[in-house]
Length: 83
Image (cartoon, rainbow, N blue to C red; front, side, top):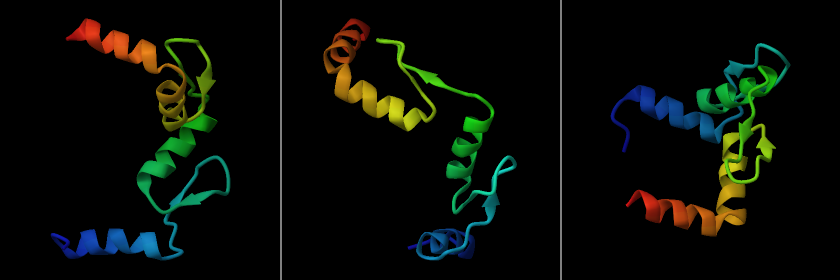
């Protein structure tokens, strides 16, 4: 299942309350380094802007959901142009 004991330990955090990654700017803690990095971008003022309507989001995942929901036609058209 896991290549080594580190992989197993890392996966174990999903099932535990262990949150070893602390935000440098606020008291929040995280189970994964990816969630930790994404959260710290908020404090650094990073925003993600929609290329179609210029709406901004603090999380890239929210921007991606917005684009998929609101701009399906534009995305399909730009993909056709790139083919």
